[in-house]
Amino acid sequence: MTPSWLRWPSLFAALCLGAASSGLAGGDYSIVDLGDLGGNYSQARAINLAGQVAGEGLLPVAGTVQHAFSWQSGLLSDLGTLGGQNSRAVAINNAGTVGGWAQDASGATQAALWNGASVTALPTLGGNSGAAWGLNDVGAAVGQSSLSSGVYHAVLWNGSGVHDLGTLGGSYSVAYDINNHGIVVGEADNSAGGERACLWGASGAVDLGSLSGGLWNAATKINDTGAVILWGTPAGASANHAAFWNGISGSPVMDLGTFGGGESWAYGLNDQGSVVGWAQEPDGTYHAFVWNGTVKTDLGTLGGFFSSAYGINDQGVVVGFAQDPSGVTHAVEWLPVPEPVSAVLLVGGAVGLWMRRRAAA
Image (tube, rainbow, N blue to C red; front, top):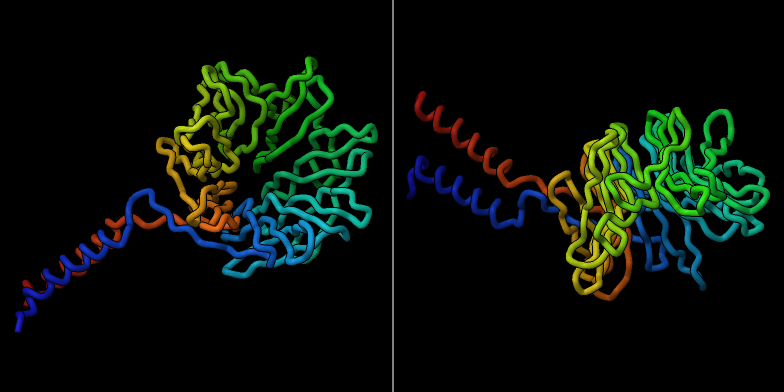
């Protein structure tokens, strides 16, 4: 029979080997299929600190009817519409309010907010359609609304109603996000008709399109530190690249590159400065990525060709979509996998405690 003082080191070695062989590694993620609304298609668009997810999925009916959904702890809930067929959820704040758009009984697309099972249409600028693309935690929403002329302007909805954020001298604008300090980002036409990344702050609309020599035509997210993610063509590139700017005047824009293909797009940003989106592979397929400030990680798929990440919370949980081997697209979340050193230190601590007790005896 093996003495107990020999069995403990053997157990420690076995546990260390088990941790190393379980696939745990720094920067690794596990992927979780969030399911769908019965129509065999879904995408997750946003996640908050509580792990609540918002997105959209097809219903099990003829045609392509999609509804906004919320997901939490394994439960997927249909959020419905404003009386029409379709809806989509693209944002969720830490209070659980969901933003997006929904069709009304006439078929018009309206900016919408969901609080639980209740859905509210947001007012327009005189036209008959709009969409909410971003929310903050103090109850403000941003997006776009049609004017009576039919053109769209970026708008802010808050407790005092709907506010036209204007343009950079052109006819069109859209707001994609707002942080908890009330700073808004999006895109706007200038007087020459060019689409430009735009920031709306205390001094009004600011053109971000020429940061670091690039041609940036949209700012898609802003966090509470003022960092921004951008879409556009950096100097020397021929296609869109995702990019990150820390929000400090004079600081360079960081081109986030690709996975060897031609283009990449960024959609989500947390307060730690991590960015998510998708990047093209050399074969033309694309995969979801997360960039942590230094390293861009390929998040993979459910076994299919394509995936994209749309949101990331401050715990580093990422949401988006991924294809399975049959090509079906499902909403997913990618969960950071703990470092193996945690398991090793835990077992090592237990062994150390046992050895101290043996010595004291």
